[in-house]
Image 1: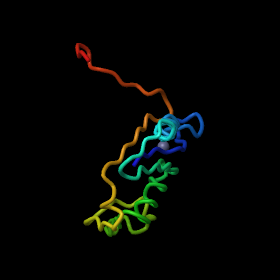
Image 2: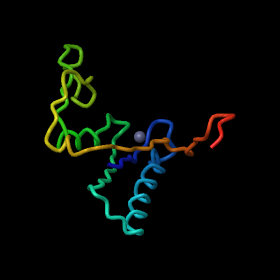
Image 3: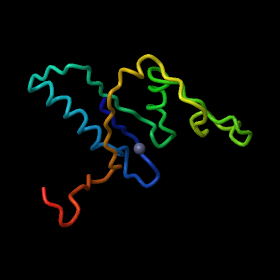
Length: 123
Ligand SMILES: [Zn+2]
């Protein structure tokens, strides 16, 4: 499963938060199709929104397909909507949960992707 999100946040310069992650995930899928890869398993691409507002898209997907996540029942959180409450208790997996072998995401925010080898590391 490849994931990324697209939204904005207080210090953002537009709805570009994780735009690079979205492009990379979509490009990876395009390349796999272009070279004719026949994967042994389904590769899912999921693009979320509302990450900065409590991971709304990802949470909705998890709830719909993968697991029930219990939220805190502590009295000081009961006035909050579920997406703002802390997670608590065991995860209750749904059948699709067992079908996910790996999930990859890249979230560099709205800026450049910065990565490299540590000084002195040879490749
Ligand atoms: Zn975001």
